[in-house]
Image: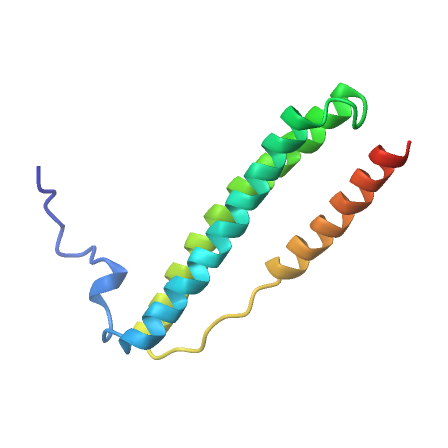
Length: 122
């Protein structure tokens, strides 16, 4: 079933010029790298929950695994948003935006690392 587009609402893919395919493919590779990272976080969450029953208190293990799952989902959403924003900017010959989200991701992973170290040693 084909959806009819209203004349006033065009997709961002219809704006500007198609970017050089090399840049578009590089943007896609970056997106796929973020998705691989998201999958790795999800796999880590499952492994932590299922393969390490003696790591820490079961509640701590479930909380850390749930947090990793949440991070994986948020990272997947972030990956798509970043890919789409970069595609829009390239189509419209605009500057690529820098994001502060990378600092948040790095800080979160540092905090999670410290929590896991505490869970292992205590």
